[in-house]
Image (cartoon, rainbow, N blue to C red; front, side, top):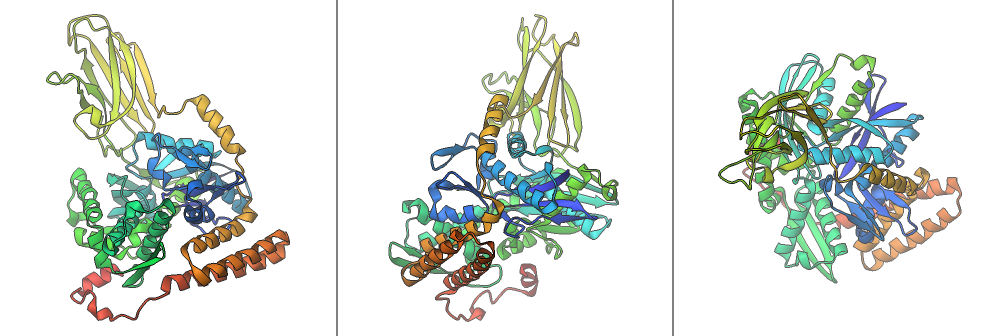
Amino acid sequence: MAIIGIDLGTTNSLAAVWRNGRSELIPNAAGAFLTPSAVSLDEDGTVLVGQAARDRLISHPERTAARFKRYMGTDKVFHLGERSFTPEELSALVLRSLREDAEAYLGEPVTEAVISVPAYFAEPQRSATKRAGALAGLRVERLVNEPSAAAVAAHIAEGDQDKVCLVFDLGGGTLDVSLVERFENVVSVTAVSGDNRLGGTDFDLAIAKAFCQETGMEFDALETQQRELLIRQAESCKIALTTQEPVLMTVDNDGKTASLLLTNEWMIHACSTLFQRLAAPARRVFVDAGMSIEELDELVLVGGSSHMPSVRRYIARLLGRKPSEDSRPDTAIALGVGICAGIKARAADLKELVLTDVCPFTLGVAVLDRSSPGRPLMSPLIERNCVLPSSREDVYTTAYDNQDTVNIRVYQGENLHCDDNTFLGSLMVKVPKDKQGHQPVRVRFTYDINGLLEVEAANAAGKMSRLVVKNNSMSDAEAERRLVELSALKLHPREQEVPRALIAQAERLYVASVGQLRGQVVRLLEWYQNILNSQNPLLIGRASRHMKQTLGQLETWMGECGLPELDFSLFDEERDEDEEDTMS
């Protein structure tokens, strides 16, 4: 049975496996490596995952969900039609689809996976990710920080050259920044920082809102479908700006057409607050590591959003380094986590590679603040960026006279007051009644590389209490019930995924078009549906190829329609050669 690596992303997800001496990406049913992290519930109750679901964000927004990774470990509920799903259940459906794709590709069962997570994911989010894996029928003993996975991939690709590199991982929904030292057979993470609420989707939203502001539209007044269509158009223009400039953004709203020319400079101004947020984590890792920018050998940009020329230029200016030309933003994390899966499977050709990681957040206990008894203070035991595994202990004493129990409350975070941090759990320790401060309690934290935190507390007599911290938002019985429910949901058969994705793409184009073009889409859909009804695999295969080509031509035409010839010399005339090289 194979162990696979999975890059579970906000926007797209990928799977990889270590075999034949290399990390190999696994294609999905459509032959693509990127599977959109979107889930839609069809009218007959069938679950759609991937591109078909992503296109239904526009045609069926009330039955479709995306960007749910951002809410992992929270009580957020997504309503798809008449059914409700938690973020980890939606993630489980994506993972299940990836698992089935891997089984079809590898020709053997897949029961275990190593999954990458943002380095700045806190314990509730990591626990939710493991729970999603279990709901997908996967054993997940190991989570790997995304920048660590990218560093491992770079290490394998470049050999054993000693380097200090900064991995800047800007994905669809999260930002991770890590300082990594690579030497001999060791990949060692020195410091991590990040922002769990900053990614490509924030840039899409900022572009959409700036477009509305400059063209007189009211973003908040738009219906859900119109809003999704506008954000999708903003995303398309953002992507187009990576290869051409300027780009014309055109949106039809209630029969009125609004247009605006977009450039990378315009985007920097429209997203100025987001760019400012990129800088803080990059500076923080150098402070935490006790290093200077001059000691940096390499800047590695990963994550789909790092394709943006404006982002590449901003980070290059900030750090005084050009990004590595060898980085593979879309696939580096997946390839790295595939290598980690090989390490987990004890592959003979990887047995000497050592990966060390660090604790992303400080872990500690609540202690009494006598000046403000209602707001306990954070007493750190394992501070952020301690190398894992780590085991630390400290001794605390009773806070009041005649106290017979001590409540050890465990928190995660960097704030002085516990109520500003994340509560992880608590345990009680019995102590003899005595004067304040006379009864000691020894507390030990043990945190392993898989994100498992064990808390032990013992009184003076050695009587021990123990807590293994996990997210308690779902009981074991509830988890079992949800597993049965998810297993009963029908995923579209793999052989039907390509036709369903093409239908969803056509429906999206129908929503985005008007007049004669809309009529062409309707006729194309009718023709294709008739072929599908024939149930003739040969005819369906030929029709699907024709459908894909025709829809691609229509989409290209819609994107380019009305684009004027422009004098490019009018834009950025003062940009120097270094900046141009950085942006390329």
